[in-house]
Amino acid sequence: MNTLFNGDDKLSQLLKINDELNHIKDIDSLLDAILYKTRRLTNADAGSIFLVEKKALNFSYVQNDTLRQRDPLNNKQIYSSFSIPVDEKSIAGYVALKGKSLKIDNVHKLDNTVPYSFNRSFDEIAGYTTQSMMTIPLITTRSQVIGVMQIINARDDLGKPIPFKESDESYLNFFAGSATAAIEKAKMTREMILRMIKMAELRDPKETGAHVNRVASYSIEIFQKWAEKNELQYKDIKNYKDILRISAMLHDVGKVAISDVILKKPAKLSDEEFRIMKTHAYQGAKLFAGNVSDLDALSYEIAYSHHERWDGRGYPRRLIGENIPIAGRIVALADVYDALISARVYKPAWKETEVIGMLKQEAGHHFDPELVGIFLSIYDVIKAIRNKFPDKE
Ligand SMILES: [Fe+2]
Ligand SMILES: [Fe+2]
Image 1 (spheres, rainbow, N blue to C red):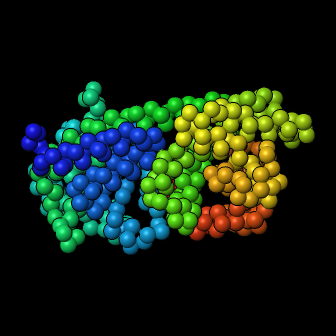
Image 2: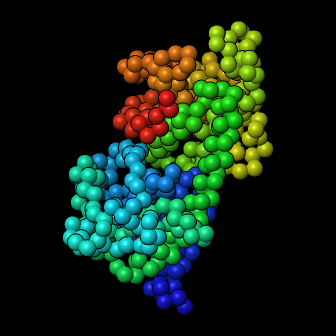
Image 3: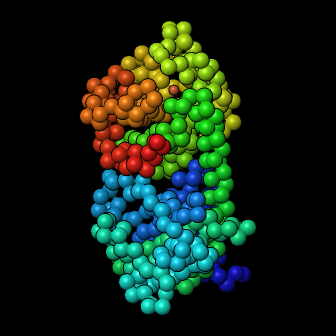
């Protein structure tokens, strides 16, 4: 019997979580699940995950119950982006550098002898008070630190912040091991997808990594609101979001089948060229035909239906209204919005007011009117996503 755990209960919980994590494909869904489970195990109010990228700690995911309760509709926090160096100056940097977890009972009463200090800027911006904190390194079996997880404000039964327990530290270090393995696997999946997208980008320079990341994130957020409105089950929403991000990123991958003469033509396409261009929807779908997994099935659906229009005047199948799969309707809106609001080689970016005016005008024509309403209601999140994934100069 392992003395690290308070009886079988915690151990069996951890094993069950481990199994769940191994089924998640998308890196963002995975970070969400890891933080949520960690916070549940320790009754922590908030937490974030930083992943090492280009030798710095990149802020990658955040959850905060208090802020979420204060403003339930606001999900833009998760699209904040900043990075901190791996050094002794910050708590997260120190933990990444040393590869050892750190339990702090009160971040405002740090000992004078420690090299790190608490960065108050997040609390100040968000109007939040961090007190207790536990920071755990994410270390691979090859002893490489790939990130840190930081959980904040353990709570007593009344919700008052209290220090984390010693026992929390032991089993979270154990849990961090399986979390790290799952993160590595999901990162590999994401990299494979981005490589596929790069192949498409070599052919069609409009389909950049930043564009597909934005389209996927808008799609996730639109879907979340749509699913809540239509009272889908929490578990179904989570599972769908996991595969939606990846599938949405692949919406235009069928362009690999279109000739360069057409894709890179600097002038307007002839009718015949446009007819060929439109086959990218079907060509993309063909890549995922066979339905071996949910991910394939959804990628097929999105590639096939992202150019359909609500009024039936789209292509390739001229589907109408709700006959267009919901994922296709969502990606259509996200894709067109992003194409217009971004500058491209052949056109400047449209003004924001013009794009919004067009969306309103096209509600019920090009786009599902319910989705346009949802999109506009989460517009500050949409803007946060654009900030997180800017086009490279
Ligand atoms: Fe397309
Ligand atoms: Fe696109």
